[in-house]
Length: 487
Ligand SMILES: Cc1ncc(COP(=O)(O)O)c(C=O)c1O
Image (cartoon, rainbow, N blue to C red):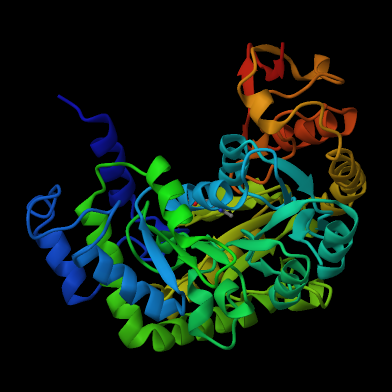
């Protein structure tokens, strides 16, 4: 008898491919603590329910409450919540708590699909913040404080602003300025810090949401802190958000059977970071800086660097975005070339490939990855630059698609719950999208549910599909892309 999932996992493990991707513990390399060893040893024995002596995640009053209090102390929050349904459930609960039905929330174009789900659940109305794009890397960067000010001054009744910080590429916004603008206008600032749990442990990194003054911050602990996949944290600070209302919104969404193994893993990481968070993150930053120095010396490679960003943005150096497009290699192709050399990256897009480093990598691992990049490029067939061609074709489409995103025919909630039918992508122009359409990862939408599908978006989707980027919300039927429209 074969086991599909177990066999696939074992095949992957035996391949020895090195993880330049999340989770941050890098298949246990960064989990050399006594508590992690205890979890591994007692895996099945620890898989318990709410028996006496343990606690209840939905109304914690014992060991879970203590761990939440330790998390709050570690991150300087007023109250922290352990999450076992990923940052996804935290983002959804935060929006539900901040935005009663019919109220408005301003969101950046760099928004994960969990925020769209939260808006659909809350019955809120999104107002899109203009999102700056990089013409060199063809990626969204984030919002600048002036745009938040413009939006909150012009649009009436915005209850909350949600920004993703850092982005999947490690780009951070001026959160302190954004927080003070939000508060001046009486809006709640929610920071989706799924990729930034480590920011609070080093002054060399961009500022974290809580230190910048955000009201609610959600972190995927598994992505950057080293706990098991699905674990996350939500923090609340100050009195702009009712803490009990937030807890009750979370109770609506989170499983009633939380895994003690996942919660123990959070406990282990919170404890470890309380003792040595600063030194762990300092070593991750130092390794990443050395790696960046080596990559900068490679010919034919661009490395996303602070110099590529306008001063309103900063960069988390532990996120490594490289492009060999000017040497004729697409992001997806570089990903494949690195995989065949023993390294799996987090994701790739048209021009770039994104690798995640963490305190679990050592400098030998990272040197090996740099050599693999050099090798992957050296033996690629010599081709003229496709970078320039793609930039001149795709950048105008991205700009137009971002501008046109303002046109919604239906609310997100109405579109998600609507009757729908499938049409060929090329026949969908002028129709209303029933789904969000997201290249995944990173899950940043090209189309929100309820938006009118335009020619630029269709052309952009075709460009991405042509180079093998997988797009949620688009299915293939007999070799042709189809999407769902409101019937
Ligand atoms: C920006 C952002 N927010 C939220 C999430 C959801 O996090 P999780 O996978 O922990 O549910 C992700 C996941 O990729 C993300 O990239």
